[in-house]
Image (cartoon, rainbow, N blue to C red; front, side, top):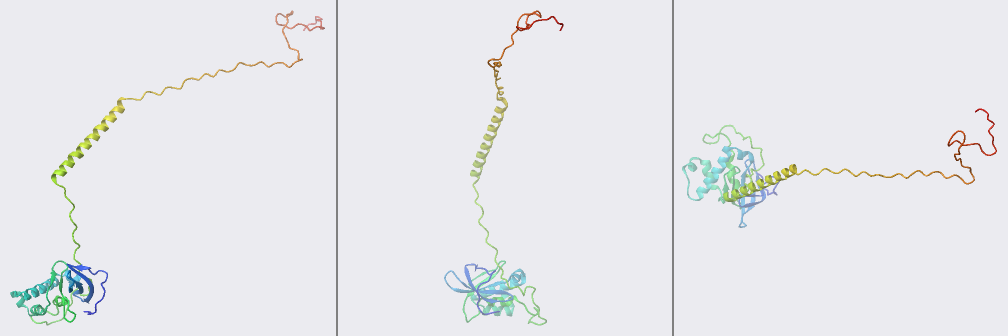
Amino acid sequence: MAGVASPLQYGDPPHLGPFVLQARLRVGPAGLVYLGQGSDGRAVSVAVLTKGAALDPAARDRFVTGIQEAAASRSGVRGWMARATRGRTAVADTAPQVLAMDGGSAPWVATPYEPDRAGAERFLEPVLVRGTLIGEQHGPDFAPHWVSDRSPALPAPPKGAPPPVETRRSVIIAGVVLTVLLVTLAVMAWLLLRRDEEVQPPPKPLPPTMFVPTPPPVPASPEPGEPTTSPSPGRSGTGTPGPRPGEEDDGSPI
């Protein structure tokens, strides 16, 4: 693993449990180690498995079991399973103090940070198994399928608070009020429709007939000095004009 501290990168968790992560200390095939700070200002070393290792039940079990054995050995309680395997006992004997841990879907462990001593990265050693599991390590070496993964396993986001639930009494009251409002609206709508059907608006009256009188014809007045024709009695009967003065009837046939 690289032993040079580097800034946090995209995808790194900002905090794990009560610890705020500040920088990367080591990056390895089994997990990542961060420099963090506790709520009391204490510097801590935090190790978390990679996504591939966290999804491997065997790797996750080796990581969590090593942490639990180390915590039990420091408290003076060591079970028969811790004494059964020499490698695990050695890890428990040389492991640092466990301040906090999480064995869930994204397991991690926090230990005190000491620049000249191994910190939480000590618990990442038993995650990778080399050789066979028969006594001492013999046989061909192998690597897990997730060995090339370098992204940390992130814990699931916390569940949001459940929505507020009203009491049964308030729900019943709200339902009754809503029912009354709906019934009132239905009755008002029925009354309005019935009134429209019963009361028909009166027919619109026709506009009155307008008589516009036409003026009488005006006769054209003759110009002065022009003779006017007037009827005079004659032989042809009433209304037949007679001969003008100076004209004689010679009795010629018409």
